[in-house]
Structure formats: structure tokens, C-alpha cells
Amino acid sequence: MIKAEKLDRGDKVAVVSLSWGGAGDEKFRHRYEIGKKRVEELFGLNVIEMPNSLKGSEYLDKHPEARAEDMMNAFKNKEIKAIFSNIGGDDTLRLLPYIDFDVIKNNPKIFMGYSDTTVNHFMCYKAGLTSFYGPSILAEFAENVEMHDYTINTIKKTLFSSKPVGEIKASKHWTSEWLPWEKKENSKIKRKLNKEKRGYEILQGKGKVKGKLIGGCIEVLDWLRGTILWPEINDWEDKILFLETSEDQPSPDYIRELRLK
Image (cartoon, rainbow, N blue to C red; front, side, top):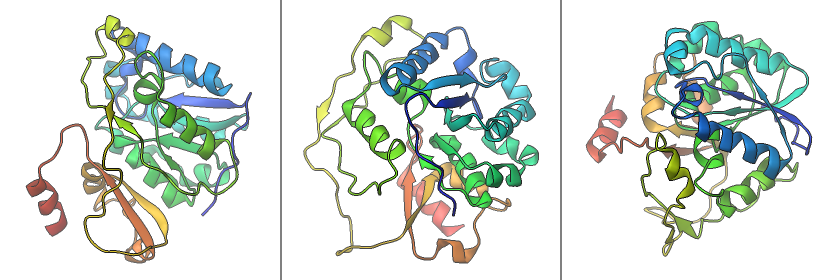
């Protein structure tokens, strides 16, 4: 697997809307602008908006080829050092017919996002490129009032250094407070943070394990079955599987049914 070069202040990063196009919708545009500003001011990066990334959810829903074009052109552009996803959604799989895996392989660079962006991570995996399962522009970069220190420090440690990431410590705080993005005034309300009392929990097993990470959003992973993106059986060997659930909060029965398919 190829690992892209680290970022430095002054580097150019592309922002893309590969699933939901809300970043370009009028009622969410303020959210995007906050996230973009944080990327530039907190991390010293130059944001390059790919041509279709802000055309809005209606246009991008009808044109998956436009979303894929942005992704391909961002990889082709030699001046761009990284690609950040604006947000996830539930539609990224429709990009698959328009993806050139050789373009990704021959132009390695940092790719970051999560949730439905799981699909794009597995596109990178198929091309032989490691990627970073992490913050999106509309969510974590545009966090109300200010970004969380945990997010800032982890981005710097992971993307701006060529050293091994090392220990990933549990965050000292968490929040699940819902403040609708479409209400612009909510961006000025800091969400309530709860103190994390338990840290990581081991549900079963003991000792230490070692392996490369593979995984993503569990519902999205299920959609990949039967496509060329689903890894071969030996690709799962000596790996640590990581999973997240979407904001739909699937039930234990749903997860169990996925296992039995």
C-alpha cells in the first residue's frame, strides 16, 4: 500500500462533495464557509474548491458523474496535496462507473472523510492507496463556535507528520447534542460537552493485537458487497476491523442480520 506524503502549511487541499451536495445549498452554505475558514486559518492550508463541489444537492444528486469528475481531477492535479470530503450522505456508490483506479494509484495524496465516504476509502484501497478516516468540512471543521481541541491535535499529529501515529487516546469529552445546521444562529451556540468517564471499553478478549486498519460505516460497507470494491477474502487477514454506525443508529438486530448475510 502507498502512503501519501504529509502536509505542510501552505499546501493546497481540494474540497469535494462526493455524496450529498449540501455544502452548496443556500441554507447550509454558511456552514461550509466556517469549515473552509478553519482549514485555512487553523492549519495554514489553501482550499481549492473543485468545480462541482458547490453546485448544490439537487444538481449533484442528478449528476454522479460530476462528483466523480471532481474526485478524479483532484487526484490528477499535481499541485493538490490532499482531498477533504465536505460531508457524507447515502449516494457515493453511484460514482463507481466513473472511477479510474490508475489515476488514484499514480497520483497518491491524502484523502479524508467518513460515513458514506467509506465508499471512496475503498476506492483508494482498491487502487493501493492508504487513506484517512477522519473529519469532514461541514461537521468537525465547522463545529459550532470552535473546533474541539481533540480534533485539531489529532489532525496535526496524523496529517502533518511522517512519524507513526502511535497511541490514539480516547477523547476526554463527548457530545450528541443536536443543533440543526439550517438555523444559521445555531452556529454561534457551543454544544454542551460531557466528560468521558470510561474511556475505551474492551467488550471481550484480552492482550494486544497488531494489524492494518480496514473498515468504515457499517451500513455503507454492506452496500459494497457484490461490487468490485469489496475486498478479497485474504485482504481481511491480519487486519483490525473498525466500524462506525450512521446517525440512523441501527439496531443490534440490524447489525446481526448483516453478519448473517
